[in-house]
Length: 387
Image (cartoon, rainbow, N blue to C red; front, side):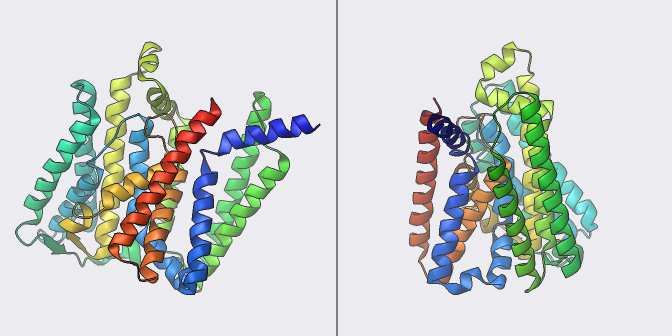
């Protein structure tokens, strides 16, 4: 009996040690620490701004997770977002394009630029590190050209600004929260039955109920807290459903499984008939579209476009850090967009908490680097533990 329990515990540890548990525990520890040292950290007002601050990094982390799953890297993703943002700002402000047309052109530009990176990487065999590093520098120059000598464009269009300033009504927020909880419960039930049907390892019922209870309590608590300030931002809804779609796309479609297969072993994937070049190009293109969405969100949030916002600061490193902290392997074939989103919250929570405590920029960089190193070490340990 004891041996059976030990085997069950070992199985659960192996399944979750490199999944959501490490990043979730890190997030809880950070929130508890800053909640005690700076009570304002857990206020509804600060929660609202924390989610807003983490939005661009979170969206970019979703995009770069797809590239990392392939076993590649994209150093140009923040610059692609910057170019898309610049195009949006110039078209909507200087040329009086409608906001929808401006957003559409920005999305197309993001997709085309990243598609180019995918073509260079897959067709010409240039390592993605080198190809996207060249893209990073080239797109930085392109962004400067678009923005002009001032380097900044103010965007006042009410539709574009409304993307991040709009909130749900209190009733709509609660209804949406309940809907999300029900969907999550259905997914847990569906996954449990699928595992039974195919003879896979199943989680104990107590663990399933605990996950459902924790998720439900978290969603409702956040909704109630945000309702007590300004309400649930429409931006949060956008990011949630974007993550749901990409998570479904990577886990439940043949194309998504191809991404994991290529990241696990590209040669084997090619031998079994997976179109590696096509999948690589398409994945880079999808990442470019996601980067463009992040650029649009950035324009809406800051009501302006500037070089420093996208490529002159730590945005790229924070994006990669969020994905890695979320457990996405730098060697491909392992990771989740949900975990990357949690990683973005860890990065955002650290920055927000350190700002509230009056920490210097140097302290923030040191702490963030230490957290990233610990996350990579945990991933390395988990891989050895699984073998």
